[in-house]
Length: 93
Image 1 (cartoon, rainbow, N blue to C red):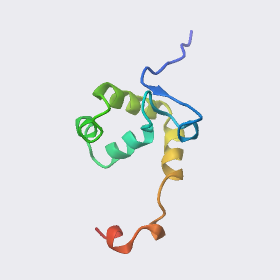
Image 2: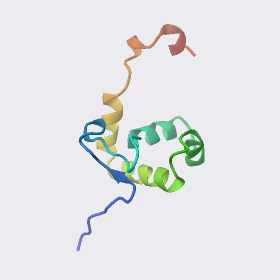
Image 3: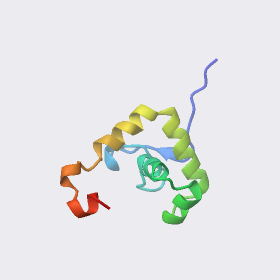
């Protein structure tokens, strides 16, 4: 028998970021956690940078990501700033 997994800290709300998965009680999207992690930040670093979050929320966001990788990767790509719009000096840093 399969069981539906419910996430304690992850939710969606069409009025917040058009229904993108966010940390419950915040406007922080799951993709923000994933992008910080991809930049090399540890979960503890992420909590220090986003002090309104807890470690449990960060770990659950990563769990949600791995369960829904294609969905979150799509949000990341849709929100990516095209290279041609990034100032040349910033791009070369």
